[in-house]
Image 1: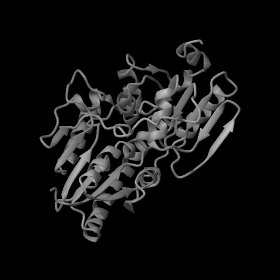
Image 2: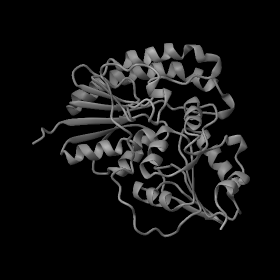
Image 3: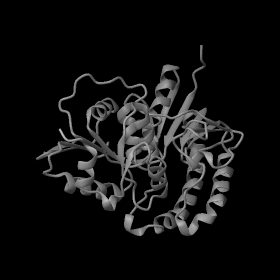
Image 4: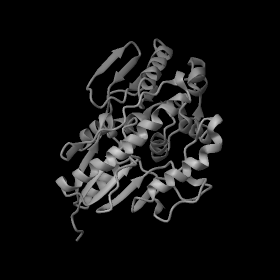
Length: 336
């Protein structure tokens, strides 16, 4: 019989991907009768609390990042000092949390300061190196070494991908450089892996768009989708990625919902003619889990997504946000 321990599970609040991919891990821990405390901030924490309303949660302040497509490389430059401060803030805060809640194991998804030598600390990431904008390309190896050094503070580093260098989802992000001795590949994680197929849904849609990510890029992407698809022949569902709201609006051929649970999202993705989503890594793991092809539109200026879209161009449709229009949709969706 497994010994019950107290786990603190904390994702980065950058869209919903870091939170959604923790669902199978949390489900496994619950099956093993472990005690779990959710931790985080913003939509990421709200999302996990909606998925697991029975669990205790702690709010731990995260970076409040505004990612504007028009600012390009300055998005990265302006968050570096914030990120450094955040690491020190988290590392100090975790000491108080451990003492107050008797935490024995920490699982941190891309929150770099959540390690402590008194407990077993686990770091989850698919990004051991950062794809920097072209002018800063020569510094990628240096940034990788910094990330690698920080991860050495953890007892374990879990990479949600396949170990095979020729058959994986993350490409250079996890496979370009040698990993630490404390690092292991645990294969992809998807919120759909333990979700059964919902047998009945109210309506099938021609297009299902799943939106997430930091503002104002998220809202701008939603606006582009709406303006392009409004009054077209395609019945469209836009899942806005707003777990803190419970809204559904129908305007002509477009239905907007703030959020849906994993079972509903999976059902809609399996029945739609076309999925449109950002090329975030968690989205790619979800698509791989249900074996579905999508139109990937990377967030402009977010180099990780731009790289992943190009890396998966043979298995998915890809398109720049600036070139997205109805003609592209018409070319993908077969005529009746």
